[in-house]
Amino acid sequence: MTSPPVAALVGEALSRYPEPVRARLLEIREVIFAVAAGTEGVGALTETLKWGEPAYLTEASGSGTTIRIGTTKTAPRDCAVLFNCRTTLIRTLRTRFAEDFAFEGNRALIVPVAGPLPHEPLAFCIRAALTYHRRASGLYRR
Image 1 (cartoon, rainbow, N blue to C red):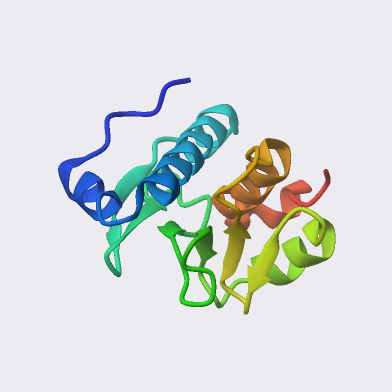
Image 2: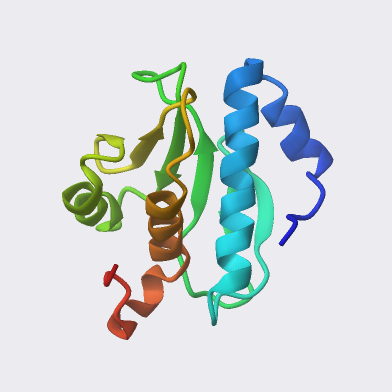
């Protein structure tokens, strides 16, 4: 699946990042759209800005929680996939993927800019967020 064209406001926000970070954020964006398209019940995503960062919402289906992408103050040279801090996502993902990612607090999964993208673990984490409101369906089985 090819993700939709980047909206002007989102493109402007992404242009503020150094090239290696921007390129990795665009890779993460591709994974978000691919996972959404391949996950039953998620439906179309809304791409917008929240707190000046690209954000992905399941407004049409209400199946998940918002995902934002950007960087964090503690890892400004790497990428972050940010989730609502009121969810249990990071706590759950930290126990499953401590070898794959670093985490920041209860809101961010840190994705290194260098090296291959950990596609399968990242796809699992994104699927968990996009289906967060449907936990009873066996969401956390790998």
